[in-house]
Length: 401
Image (cartoon, rainbow, N blue to C red):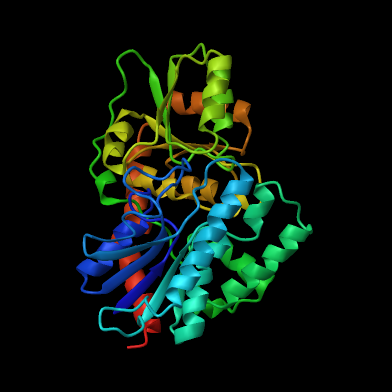
């Protein structure tokens, strides 16, 4: 197959789509990605990249074209400019006649990989309209509901506008694969999407997390807990820091690995409250992450207390489980169900720091067997092999060859 991938972010930005594209190439398919200039999550262009340099390159067999992009910087205004700069520039590029497969013909199928915002899927719709190529979407965030978590009121003019945009884009897809089961009912109810167009396909973890050795309890009885991932408003990392403050006299160490719009605020909070057992490491390359995971007795997952955010199963959950790590959460919705089904950790309500602190103390009393349960459940339900098999199957069903 000749596959066009539409996604705003690509390597060196930390997204699994790189792994997916390279696997498709390894299976004999031709893959081209149309993405933006890398600047996620800090909002600054990565070294060596700009709107004038490295716009076209081939990475491990994947042809990558980067369209003009305004960097995210900080603040909602700049994020909106960032989102629309990609959507507009990518839509123009894919309909310009330049976005063709190696044989000079249109691609057989489009894969629209979607996190926030919904507008990043616009170029896929544009390509479909011009060439009739069918589109398979992999959906990891729900719109316009993500706006609610960001402070936009339901029923407001922006919400109503993006509800219409979301309806048009979702209904324009030929197939939608969703990363959380709870997305299916939402899409059927909100957008009247046929059930046969929707299918659950959970995310998987990168291969480097498969062989992390189990961590033995520390001789001094200390407990090391780690959060790894984006540090933004949705992730509610402040809940972790408030729990750390409650437990600051305990022999418990908190490790925060990642970057994002809230990192500075979290560092300021830790400094203000003298949280000496909290360490920040910033964003690290994915190749370094296994050594950080190896430090941890358990991994932390937190999200905002929001009914729509709760529909999402964060991708870090699968990564934590692949690494064979117990999970301690302060999160609602799908994630507590998975943790309970796997019997791999404990979970408190979202944004409830005292309950998270209590969960940590309960975990500390007895966490025997939780690591093994975590890895076992991952292998049974979230394997990379299953994901790759399903992606290829869905693309081949809609490819026009």
